[in-house]
Length: 238
Image 1 (cartoon, rainbow, N blue to C red):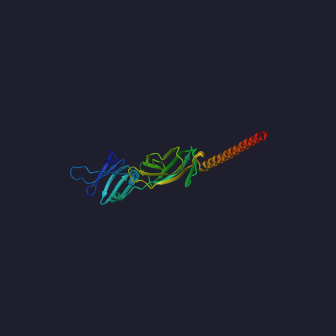
Image 2 (image 1 turned 180 degrees about the vertical axis):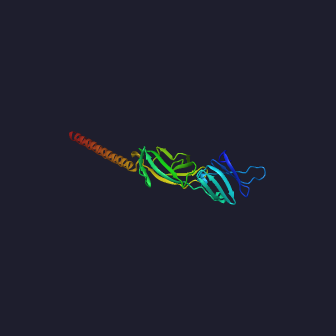
Image 3 (image 1 turned 30 degrees about the vertical axis):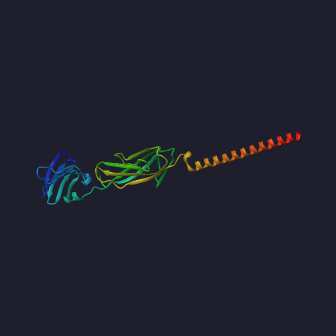
């Protein structure tokens, strides 16, 4: 399909390929073979055009001349088959916990009681390109599958205690995904689930059992001495 239904000019190269100037880039159709319409290619900012508004085209041998709204573009035709759109340079910009920004570090420690997390990320590209899409996941969750979004933000509510790795990628349209950016998070358990609190409870429980046992033994012995004293007195009376 063409980048736009509004076309300004059509040019043909020596191999019979069609180059079509539109207001949203250059449409490229391979040479026709038989009655079937060949699959086309849309060339726009993602392929390096300085402007998508193409007013005229001229083919000079293996060179494509295109008049754009930002000047004359002169490139070898082979450039478009070799060019690969740059991958987005992705960054994790900030992390907010309960609406408050926290300082980024290699591993963020977050209390269980303040466990509403917002992660803001973004992409810097070497040139202006089309829309970006993102995908992210939180490794460490039981369901750590990718989630797609066009908004550069991810929200997580009430994560269970544990260690996590947040991972995000970006791409332009249907291009390749960028390398991942990650940040590690650690959600501390609530007081009642910390190891030292459980250990303290165990010590208190053992101490209470020992004290009760010692009291019970002393009570039994005191009773036995009292009963023995009463029997002795009865024997003396007899």
